[in-house]
Amino acid sequence: MKSASAISFLTLICFSFFSFPASIHAQKAPPLEIMAVVLSKTCPLPDSPDLQLNSPESIMKSAENPSCPRQGDLQLIQAAITNLSGKSQQVGFEFDVKVNNKTSTRKNMRKVIQVNALDTVRVMHEVMLDETGLYRVSVKLWDPQFKSLFTQTPIGEERQFLIASRTEIEEAQLQMTGGGDKGARRPISLQFDPPDLRWESAQVIPKHALRGERLRIRLNLMNVGGDIVQGTRARIEYFNTRQPRRKTIIGTPTAYVMAPGEVVTFDLEYVLPEDQLLGEYQVVAMVDPDDEVEENKEDNNEIKSNIIQLSDIKLLLPTDGFVFEENGLFLFQWDSLVFSEFKIQIGVDDQFEDGGAFFDLPQGDRWIADKEIVPLSGELPGMAMGLMKSLEKNKLYWRVIGRKASGQQTISEIRTFSINPVTGGKQS
Image (cartoon, rainbow, N blue to C red; front, side, top):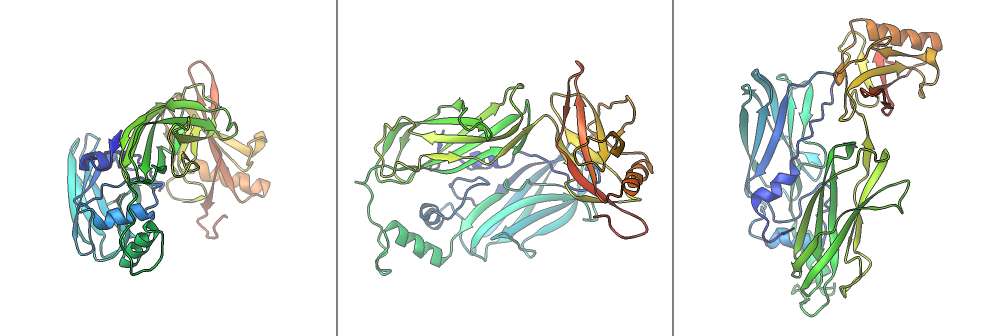
């Protein structure tokens, strides 16, 4: 548990940059990892992908706190890239800076960097903060020609900070004073009002988890009332969305003291049991579950996280709807923690029920221990396009089957892809 007024610069950045590389092109990415992205100016505000920086309290903090970046400041950005392989790698590096979800090309930076074997390279960039709005900073790694994207900071895990406009600040002041004459900007004191506990954000990563994988949970709780509250307990649970009444407790952290306007951050880790039912899950947080605190509002004490997909096999490449070139590289990648042998199935049957409408790779009784497969030259397009022609279909489906040493098997989700033939005319 940490108060926003006392959270250190390093604590703010640590959680935001768990690296979950996400290759998105059918080209094998080099073993490079984005270790950290550091900003020279950052607000002591909750920093998470699900946070909406539009509450009047957050806007006023961004405008009044001296640690927050201001319009006209120079923001220094530093990223660390680590080469996990035993040989030197050359990679296209990019700082992607968005303002209000729009890429600012004049603020971006691209360069080709060399990362020696088992070494870490730090890249520095300066950005002039001449615009107001919500800034998001992420890192992208490309091939040296900047044509194929290898990996990037996952969506929702970028660094972010707010530079509020004058209009936003004035509107926030009005909301905090209860409205009225715009000439009266002096906030009404809340020191005699009751406390009011409200969740600012709830974040769980990864959003697609494997059985046996560790979930990281960050919750930001704020006292938006006018009085101190002490010894407030929270209850953190998770549930399968198909069984919302069957909740399991993850933890019961306590906020020992919260002053008006103070934010407390709870960081938890949890591994779902290996016998957990597969499917979609959510984390739900309830503050003051026993209703022991007299609050200004009693109906804002609960928050639910993003949906978490739990499975045994996570498909990585190709992405759903990907189009391969007939003479190009065919690469299939996946991940699993509890299964050790695999094969993929490809066909034109979206349910894989007709044995004559799909085939296995490797064929026959063979299985592979790798978590990727590159079909032999001519093997995939020939067999797949033959099926499409004979069964008059124009779309292909693929899935992965996993097997344990005990013989137990599991099946992944199903994704689609298509092949663009050499003669032209894309399959859709």
